[in-house]
Length: 462
Image (tube, rainbow, N blue to C red; front, side, top):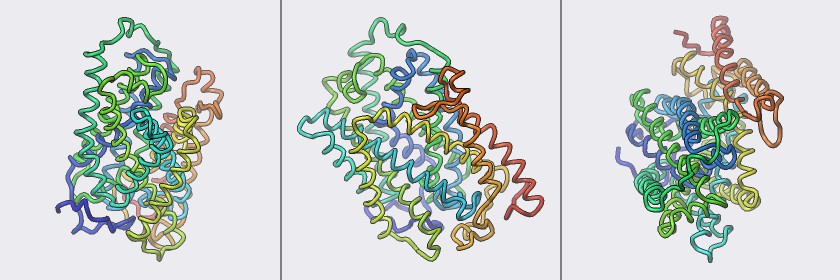
């Protein structure tokens, strides 16, 4: 089926009909590669050398390990889209129940708002750095409008946007490395700058892993239009390769900039790539629009999911999605304008707290999908007033999820709160590993026992 990128998408959270399924695995590579090459990814990589004080080699190792590990979870979620044909957070009703899923879905909406606001701040700074006549605030507004247009048109336009950004931003990224390393040349003492502390390595590994895991709540939103027989392996590897490679390369650039430049990441990028900095910053600023549009689009789908829970007869269509896209963008714009001055501090705290609430969710979701039900769900029950065969609440999933948050607290390291074990580890945050290690086996054993007793709906035990 030929993509109609100029047509506003009419589907929202409901199953995609077989006649409207289209796309191939390669589309998943470009949507995740192209959408990751942006200023925010570069800024995240810069944390390795500015916040965690790592050497270039240690930074590259930590970035690789974190993204390679976190990407596994991201890509496993992507493979769910073609099989079920619904957004990721709708599918969560199969694990948590119709009302039980609301808490997680609401957290995800907040997550989208945070990422949109973060992207808008950096987009505004980028435009201001190359055009002094455009203030930070004006730049934020311009990026908001660009993102909103793409989000309104929906799935196919976002895919096409990211596909173009794969080539354009990929070329700009290559130009950055060439200019910094070959044209300007690296400082002679580059390999002596920074260090390789354990807490620094663990901290950056966690940041890389979170970057990938943060995509888990909506990665299947961009594979749900694919034919049901697309296959788990092609979907997995295309998503994994695109997202990991598209994240690692700009993060490494950010780590390098943190060692060779001073000041903010945007000004540092402009400084390091002069005199081609105007072109580079323009390209990356436009690239921000792709990712911001994705976050707006999925934030709206999750908002509709919350609303449909309380009004199951509501059939949200294109008009509702457009209206909510405008509201969502305005809220994110307000957050960006309010928090622009303290961006990096707010962003680091946001990442740490986000990881705490998303890691146990991804453990429950993946164990249930792949090991308990083997991908077999009753999709109509997702939209039933009483939750269908999954009910309103799944006590097993909710208990495991809550426990997954609690067990992380001693290992959590943020400016807001640092647990005793994290302090003993020198500030290293390994809370996400603890959540995955505790929740995954616990939910598997408990869910299987519940299924054997007939208290877990529609089990597919193999």
